[in-house]
View 1 (cartoon, rainbow, N blue to C red):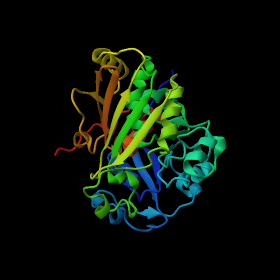
View 2: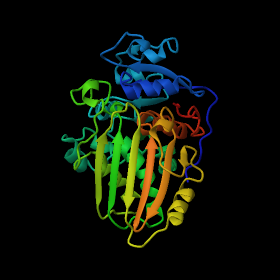
View 3: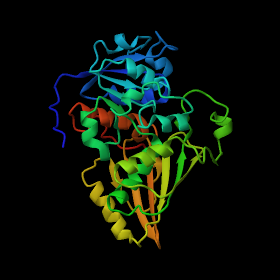
View 4: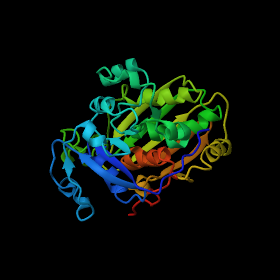
Amino acid sequence: MAAKRRASTKKKRVCILGAAGYGGSELLRLLLFHPAVEVAHITSRQHRGQPVWRVHPNLRNVSELAFEDLSIAEACEDTDLVFCALPQLSGMKAIRKLPTKTPVIDLSGDFRLRDPDVYRKYHGKSHAAPELLEEFAYGLPEFERDAVADARIIGVPGGFATAALLGLLPLARDGHLTGPIVLNGVVGSSEFGAEARLATHHPERDEAFRAYRMTDHPQIPEILQQLAAHGTTASEVTFVPYVAPMVRGLFMAVYARPLRRVTRDLARRAFEMAYVDKPFIRLLDGSPDCNVVCGSNFADISVDAQGSTIVVMVAIDNLVKGAAGQAVQAMNLRLGLDERTGLEFPGMRP
């Protein structure tokens, strides 16, 4: 087990590369109030020189930071840790230029898959830093705590993968994932970023509910990779993602059919054991609700069994536990802090 570092009382200086998107906005919302961190730089080529509140109006009178257009060397010159919230395919190019001693937490999605051939298959382009793919830690703190604490590069999982793995890994650890797995995931419009697109702007999304990328979603191999890392080779995984008329929230329904019958109590016990010391996991009866976790780093999970099928339901905020909040949780572990630091707040209701 990795030794826990002693956190310094001096605030750590962090930089956010690509802070103009929704991920950057959430990182700022969380980090500006973090007791152990000072945000030193936020970068954006498009918005350079503009005060942060012009792009993120919720931060008016909260921060006097302005966007900078800095080189990688300039951004890292006086920082202790870097968050990379650049678009996919840009993140790996930036991380490749970082000093080898600078810890980096990547939200771009470029450091989730270890096999460059799988990356090329699902993303359509070759990885620009394949030599780094074996070095990163997969940033799911509930199951990779020690690896995250010691890694230089931490790849924040995708939102769907986060919810799916939180619902699958307790079963995998108890040997219950021996048959086919079906995943149904629903996500809000913020998952697709701040840039307006035909399929994501309001007239197309309001009152809409539809499936997309039903057979080639890039988080499918991410899920399979982590199941294999925990000793489970799934015989078959079917994942259908849906978009729903909500801004925030991600709901995942997991259906597993083990070879032997598993009762609800037995399945529930696997989750109680897996999450006994995990502060952001809440086990409940009945269906989780995205509204309840909205704005928080909590994952609400319920588990049931019917006949030969185990049913697990997971609700998270896709921008917090599915992205920025999980990144801050990983940062806390990497800096030797309590993983709850700066994240102990409930969701918004109503």
